[in-house]
Amino acid sequence: WAKSDGGGKYEVFDPERSAREAARIELAADLPEALRRAEFRLEYQPLVDLRDSRLLGVEALVRWHHPRLGLVPPGDFISLAEETGAIVQLGLWVLAEACAQAAAWAEQFPDAGNGSGLFVSVNLAARQIRDSALVDDVEAVLERTCLSASLLQLELTENEIMDTAGKPLRVLEELAELGIKIAIDDFGTGYSNLSYLRCLPVTSIKVDKSFVDGLGGAEGLEETLIQEKIFGTIVSLAHALNLMVTAEGVETEVQAANVRRLGCDAGQGWLFSRPCAAERITQLLAAQTSFFPVG
Ligand code: C2E
Ligand code: MG
Ligand code: MG
Ligand code: MG
Image 1 (cartoon, rainbow, N blue to C red):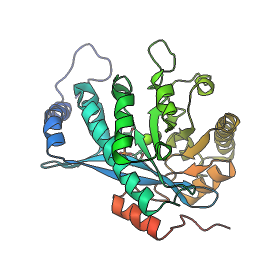
Image 2 (cartoon, helix red, strand yellow; image 1 turned 30 degrees about the vertical axis):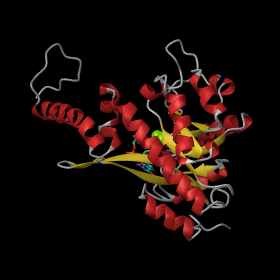
Image 3 (cartoon, rainbow, N blue to C red; image 1 turned 90 degrees about the vertical axis):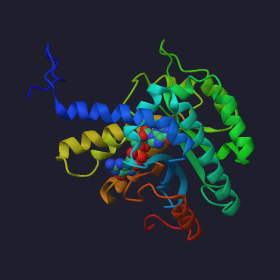
């Protein structure tokens, strides 16, 4: 079979590809019903303070429990939901659910996190950021759930925070004025002009997993040194701008030790914890879990 993605002039029928396409169309059609039937759940993944090993906050990650297909990961439906517009409703559900959960944790564990409660970090899709109702919606959710704005963080990617003219979006200022935190997700993979960091109300960056992967000690010495320089420079830049730095996708002890040595503030990844149900986070809070031994 000739592959159809090679830029050829004609396409050869590819049964695998058309099956995938059919599955996508089916999933897209199921989205509105899934929202009505409450088939979505949130999992929460710990963000760990690399200095004292404490749980600082959690990232909310949506999962779809499809009645026939089982667990569908967000990679398979978020972009679909953006295309159909269902993301606006889904995103609002995620926000409300995450804020309600964070408010419950804040009440039960007021001293968690950095001392004033565990924060929850919620991913925003491009379509949501361009929705004129977003700021009002966020404000209404905070009011309804009684969550302090300081315990909510919104994650946006570099490309999402730029308008088509390459200017940062005004809506970020309005969100920041509410007192919420704003993190740049997958930092280093998108828009490459760093000057936007200076003029935006951003509070932290999450360095993409691809930069952390190179710090596992598996590469040769020369490559390792380059990877360390790049990571260290990102950290210096962020700290010079008063931004907190989180390393994404930390899977090994060696990576954790390296990002910590290079000055990174927080870590997130399978080494510390996979994303898990809210009840599990409650257990971690109750046990005041340390995520690694502190020397
Ligand atoms: P993200 O925001 O960059 O989230 C991190 C992803 O990396 C999550 O995948 C998480 O489970 C995974 N991850 C965390 N630690 C490790 C690790 O050590 N190793 C590896 N290999 N992976 C790790 P997940 O949950 O499948 O989500 C994928 C993406 O889907 C997210 O990337 C985010 O862009 C999007 N997403 C998830 N939930 C939502 C949501 O509620 N709204 C929106 N708009 N997007 C969401
Ligand atoms: Mg994220
Ligand atoms: Mg990310
Ligand atoms: Mg990432």
